[in-house]
Length: 461
Image (cartoon, rainbow, N blue to C red; front, top):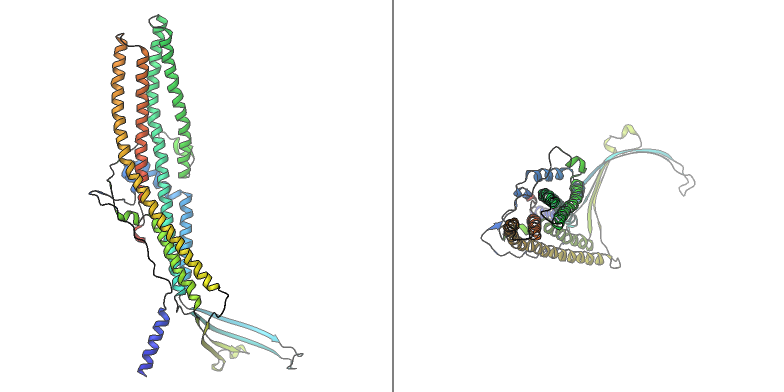
């Protein structure tokens, strides 16, 4: 008796726990980056490192109202619901049943007897597919991985949106700074032209010098017009990301954007955890796990599908006798289905799932390589752009000194007006270039944080 009890307990445990036919997943390891003394870490709200309150408020607003994020949230909900459905399949299904029927048999059958009868029934039915080969658990694991992958996909969309807002913001801030420089320059050119025009009318200078001043003024004004056209397009682009109209966003009492943020100092080192937790890398890994689990689902078709069914209830021709003890009926028993010959369908499905796994493995490796390339490129650009910005600042100082020297020499009669105009033009171009170079540096720093996948959901690790 004791031995039978032990055997039944072991069999019950084996049936309920089942086994998995999914292969052991071999995930390629992510190469460890070269260790550095100072290592970059990315916090969840990584854009706040730029220290611009206006930029912060725009991003926070976009994270609430952006349509792409709303669609991503619905995809996550659908994936979670799919997992919930597959998880529910692991448990028995209990249904209440009830019926009433009234029938008249034919007197023209072999029984040669015509009968009319009524039947009432109430009961419970139980259905439970034993997950002996891990089919249902593997399907649930696959759907769970897809759910986590949809979370990572949403984070990728979020980081892309944040980066797009930052880039649009930097474009507008750069345009504002360049327009401000041009406004000051145009005013100087206007005053210079009016002064030279009076000198020409007085006969102290020739007409050429006055015309050169006018041409310089017109050239700067035309350049400003181009920047204003670009500004309108950039305002529309930023407003679209925020789900607003340009009028609603920019026609306030005070200008929304006035200047570029200050560049930050970026350490050279990169923690390996950053790349492992990059959303697209995690999404590719979840896809890999999902495809691996599906192999177990398809392999389970080689073996019997075992189910337990049971029923219990009351049945009677008279509703008054429905709850009598003699009206009780019940049934219980296992059923199984075993494929014998299917012309290779199961084997083909297994091979197809293996092919899907290989494709997912290649996609994962491609995603990791892409992550390394983007981070490497973004880090490499930092030093080069920083040097370019430093050279540009020295260039501005040189042109400022050159303008002072040529102006002084012209007033002393030792230089012609063309030299002064060249110095002014060179200083203007260097000043405009300095703004665009600063914008390029900030843009590359934002791209670096995007490449590192900052702001991932720590709870999904």
